Image (cartoon, rainbow, N blue to C red; front, side, top):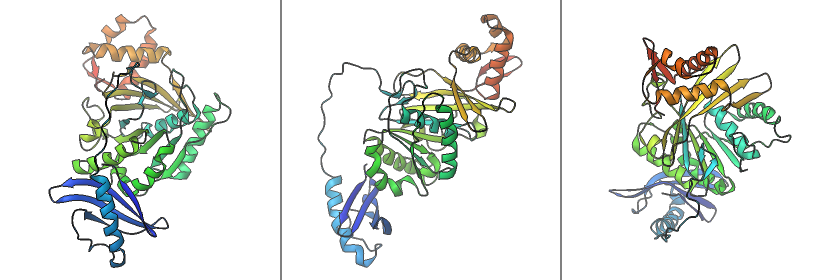
Length: 376
């Protein structure tokens, strides 16, 4: 349920985390003066009890509650569905991010998901066609619970140095360091959300602000995310899976099942770092799609002194073999010998492709038989 923000005299009052319960209509009420929080409490909006609020603020809160309840309970106007000429899904990045929707990437730590997300933000901000097709430009915002402004700027500078090889003047995305759960700052986020086309949430666990296995906490988190999307914003959420689950084909984003069920598109990322080449080989596999399921993406992320390179090598021999191996193993287990027979590439190319897939946790095997570790 979307949040309500009201002005009462010198105060602004935010009603967040709104939900119906058996005892009434619950909401977290936050009072601000001059942008600073001066009081707050979890209240039943259908009760007269505001005793947990400072006495001098109680009357303003009572007036605010009346307005908020009237707005929350107001009847929306239903829209009649219309016939569309184009029935294809709408993409912000073709075959990667569904437009005006919730998208999610899950991965263990250290495989490059934050770097990849920042790269997508910079690609969209500058309209650079890095994913095989023309790229629509859009305003981007990075909400960061993981690192700080300096580290994010350092990464963006290195990515920007790479993108300068394609476009001379690179514009960086907007950035906000987040220190409290999304529900506590959603009022302020919703005030600026309409100015953005793409918002990244890094990452789900601290943004949800509690036990990620708690379904009510997850639903409250996604209530906030949906209120952002309602402003015609594309959202990408980054989430974790434990390293113990790396070779589990059915591993889901860490926490409640809602972290997989609610997003319209869920990607699982696996990666292998090569110390000699100073490169990450990254595989993005689509776990779940509410539209046509996209093919996997294979990227190389290279680390130079002043640059972080992103290479989409769909026409590179090794990556083409990796894609073919994935397709073949979707049909069931194969031996290495069976795979070698089916390809016209040099043995060294096939061996390198298999090595990358195994080290990144995409393919596993015993006694010479190989199978997928991830459900594609």
